[in-house]
Image (cartoon, rainbow, N blue to C red; front, side, top):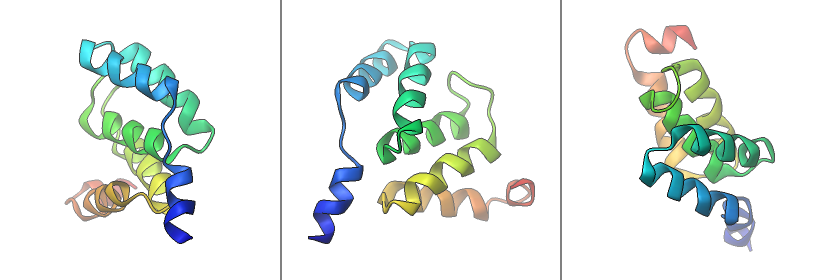
Length: 99
């Protein structure tokens, strides 16, 4: 029962399929737009992927505070990759002081 609840928050839809296509093409502007739409609806996968964009500075200005925010939102829903990434951001020297 618990795993079903987690999976329900991590589902992907057409917008995330389109996001993957945009990523593969290097179209970060479209990727950002699609991820933002889904992340704002609470989609943990989209929240995690936004965190990655901000963490890596791909398609956006690198912003560890913003990465932290999106990783935390996804982690709070039990998305395992986000839990690790959130912890990783917290452990980085100097960066954690900015959070």
